[in-house]
Length: 228
Image (tube, rainbow, N blue to C red):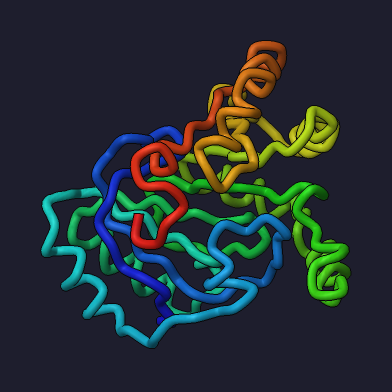
C-alpha cells in the first residue's frame, strides 16, 4: 500500500473523538478539495510502499484496539480489503474514513463518511485544472447509501458557510433511514482559531437541524501538524 504516515494519537473527530487510536494514512486521492488539510496525500501525493504485514506489526506496538484507516482516500488503495480483513482478524475496531465516492465490501467497524460539498471544489486552485473531475466525482449518494447499509456509520460534513445546509439536506433527502444524531457538522478549519470563529453559528445550525457538532480535538492539542 502507498502509505503517507503511520502514527499513534488521539482521535480528534467524530463519534469516537478522544480515543487513543493508531492511524494508517494512505496516500492518493481521487478528489482535490480546495481546503484539504492533508495535501501531501492528494495535491502532492507523498509516501512509500508498505506491505500489509508491516502495517499490522506497527499497529501491534501500541496499546489500543482502535485503528483508523484514513487518507487521502483509502478506498482507492488496492490492498484496502486485505488490510481491513487482517486487522479485523486480530480483533481491532476499524474506522475507515472516506469521502463516499468509491465502495468495496471491506471489514469495517465504523464507516466515517465525509461527502464533499460544492465548497470543496477547486475552481481557482492550480488554474482550476482539477475542478471538473472533482465536481463529477464528489457527490455520489448511491455509494454513501451502500456504506450506510453495510456498516455502522457517521456522516461528517465540512461547513464553510450557512448556505451549505441546503446541499446537506438535499443529500440526506436522497438517503434512506438517516439517523440525524450520526450527522456531524464540522467547521472548515486548519487552526484552532479558525475553528473557534465558526463554532458558535455552526452549533446553532446543529440545534436547528438536530445534528451533532463535530469537534477537532487534535487542532487544540497539536495544531495542524503531521502525525497527529
